[in-house]
Image 1 (cartoon, helix red, strand yellow):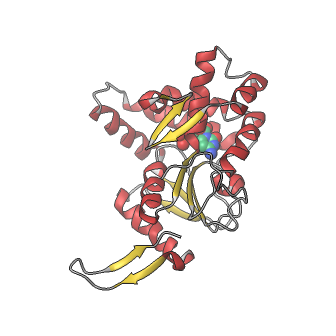
Image 2 (image 1 turned 135 degrees about the horizontal axis):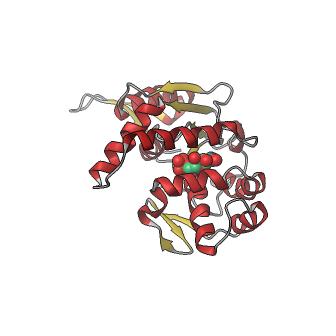
Length: 253
Ligand code: C5P
């Protein structure tokens, strides 16, 4: 399930309905982890980075300067963003991979530095909390947007490793990329996200820190699932041992 506007939303910052936040720098696999956890638990999923990416793209289309905070905040307040079946839509148009490029990531990190822009997107994000639960990934999910979430994860990996992962993904898609330039782009985006005065990237108090530098996506998923079982034992029940050996299974809400 993907988060979107809806009547059942509960803008409580993650107090009553269970919320899991996953924060960390770009390229750590937060999005993959969040989607997998949400699917496993039968919960909703919020990719907050997509909001900033769509805003950067929409600004480009409307000819708005990425330093024009007031104009960007106005655009953010009326952003016709939608999520459907894993796709990100702007005014109903499926944006496909347009928002997943390095350029879109850098534009996102530029619009994301503006306090008025972040304020304009805050309520929308909080309205995505709905039963049976929400998994939200981004930079400030645990520190600010869902500060009352019961499980907060901070996923990290070295800049070199993250750039290498991105390099492999892009090469697979047939793009001709330069690894040292990618490392530099990753470092630049990290610096902008960590050093900005508003909602800087940092681990929330009490967050579980996972360094995925030497871990596979499966290892990370299992590691975080252990924490989910610890914090939300009611979401699981022991299923009878079956032909597959049994195990723990998610029980929607
Ligand atoms: O997570 P993703 O790489 O899609 O995010 C793109 C950019 O959007 C980040 O580099 C960051 O600057 C910004 N962002 C943010 N707060 C979030 C999510 C993303 O500032 N919660």
